[in-house]
Image (spheres, rainbow, N blue to C red):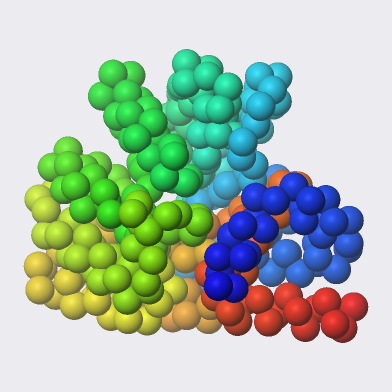
Length: 307
């Protein structure tokens, strides 16, 4: 029930207006957000690389409803990929299609995405399209395939959420296509007919989808996005069972969540990429992180009481 409440609050404007006024909320969010500027994100990326960790940078934002605002988002991502190249960072970027105007027009969104992919391709930077709520799943997959197949971008990947009931079929098709996929559990409030409501069922789906994808032939590439030790152990078992070469997978984790474990995995020889969000639109992302783990919520409550 706490998780469902926090996921509801992540999209509630009244809570956003109330909470973002307080400096303690911003300070607490900085545990999970690199900062509000590109410089902050670049600095965080450099620090991660010192520990053998890679990064994917996400300029936070979603549900943009003004076309002019989407142009600013495109310009930010273009500047970001150019800076990644200029500074020699081993980083990719991640983005949301509603940040590029999907709620305004699918054609506008595709035009904006193409502009970013073109700049990223010129800078040899990979781009992952984040998955949002199930209302966008079909559109997101359609746009991903259009970028890859119609416009011939080879630097684009997609996210699949294990809690969605449809994901087994989606993963099967993407594996056959040799896609670059990030598999995560999912962090949106969904009805039970669309997503598994119980954690055990989500975990079982994650392992099932992960093993099937890892057993697919190359060039299918899997980013295993988890902090769950059971999922990490299941991934390691799949690597052994299917003799998966290390160039076909990586672990991905969130900035500020289990940093010691992130470094341990990298020191063990795994490729580990950290999702580094930045920007002023941190509220929805922060609330979804609180919903994922009760420990995160208590961290926030302690900051509230002690402010």
